[in-house]
Length: 191
Image (cartoon, rainbow, N blue to C red; front, top):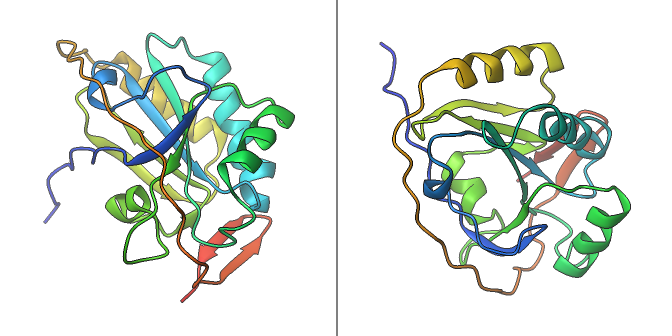
């Protein structure tokens, strides 16, 4: 038996980059949303995930597909600070909005990462025009497969636009308590 489609969980963001205002998924209703979850020290994110997200950002009109980055740090918290991320985004010329996943009070796994059940980085979440998660994928996905999915979702009818605003504030990151297993394909959460 298939489980019903899941409505996208709200983003829990401590700080935004490359945007002047906080972004909520409700404010993007009516457009397809691609969320690329990454860590700046993840080889698979830098080699495959971020370049793919930039291609989508450049090739699809923002009126149809919105690309968001989710910097979701579950290891090396002291090295991957917002200040370091700002420099990273500049050096790698990442121009789409990037949110820093809010640290969880009781876990080294950040809040949004937990809400979506992400297994590591890079991860890709695709949300349709109605706010339903249509893809939650760990690791690299081929460009052609992703393009086909996005094309299908863009061709679906758009619902009425709903606009709300969110609130972002800064918090401290938790101490490192997890190890990650990283290779060219990505970083997996270790326990």
